Image (cartoon, rainbow, N blue to C red; front, top):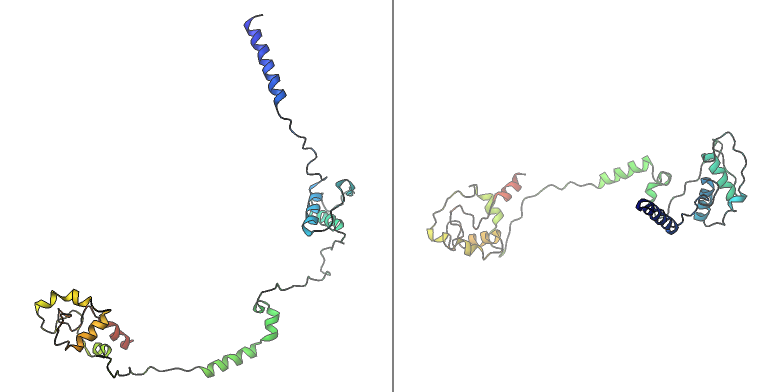
Length: 233
């Protein structure tokens, strides 16, 4: 026995061993247990509705098809489903009454046109618009009230009384004010408060705390332009 013959015999034995160990593929010829897909759809519909189960596939009628189409046609599927559920299929016809529309719970009646038509009309809407117009009032703007008491200087009045742009020097200032400008301005909660204190201490002619080093009459970056624009608008 030569070497080639021995190799052939060993190869055949190995193939036989692998074939014996291979898993068996199950027979899937039975499908899902129904004769056709329409039977499966009927059974699925019955399960979703919670009704009784259908008779086994073997008892389903296998009458010849009519001229409407094949086994998967919509007419055939509807007829088989209705028969399985014990109902009489309805034919599509103008004589069949339209289904009654039912409003879902929780939906506003404003989405129901029939309900809105019962409650409102064109005449009632016109009357409501007329009532709203009768109650409409136009309030004309008035002059700003004058401040009194111990509220301090009125920075709104001061902004409207002045006309110079911010940064335009009108008053003589000492160079010493530039040294303490940032530190002194940081003591105020806002530029409005700094301007009020600046005017209360003799400003704009005097700048006792160095709040207006450029001499424009506006302390700590206070800007009169928003107040002037409000009056113009």
